[in-house]
Every structure is written in C-alpha cells, then in structure tokens.
Length: 109
Ligand code: FES
Image (cartoon, rainbow, N blue to C red; front, side, top):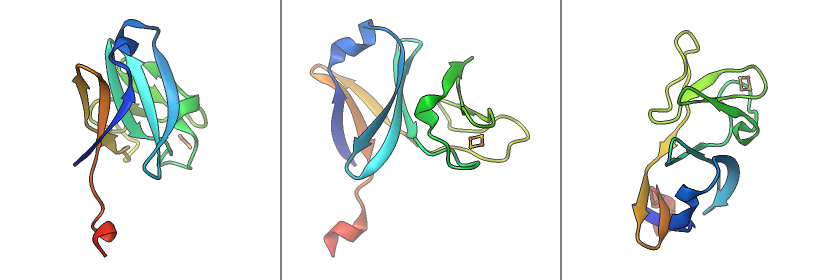
C-alpha cells in the first residue's frame, strides 16, 4: 500500500466539503463529513458523472446526474441500484490525513 498525504490534520476541524482530487494518476473524490474523511472513486459507475459535484445525505454521496446514492463507508449503492463505488482507506496521522493506494504491479515491469 502506498500512503499519500492529502490534507493537513486540522482539516477535520473545518467545514465539511466534497472535493475532486488527482493523486498518483487517479481521479478521486474526498468527502469531509461527520468529522471524518472519506475517499471514493470520482466517476459515478452509472453513467460517469463527477461525484465531487454531488452532495451528502445520511452518510451517502448523491450523484448530481441521476441521484444514485453510495454509502461513503462501504461504497455500496442504495438498494435496487446494483452498483457501487470503490472506497480507499484513509488514516489520520500526526502530520495529516493520508489515503492508501494499492501499488500497481505494472510499475514493476
Ligand atoms: S451518472 Fe451518476 S447516477 Fe447516473
């Protein structure tokens, strides 16, 4: 796992947000809500919308296009949708908030 710092630790004390972030060639969506940071894929699995333009509702992120909802913790789509978003692990360390990205085996070639 490759851990990359996304934000300073004090971001948890600030306002909630939803941001698109580009990290190691991946486009992700970072959400600060309920005093936690969640990181998920940014592209909606339904039709490709930018999830960072959505909003939060009851622990879910809501897609701005057709309002599919995804659990921020598990990535599971709401019942009946049959889809999910990939979630990335986060860690709060003394010097900031980190996201964990799996290392691609392609880089070893
Ligand atoms: S593109 Fe996200 S719900 Fe359709």
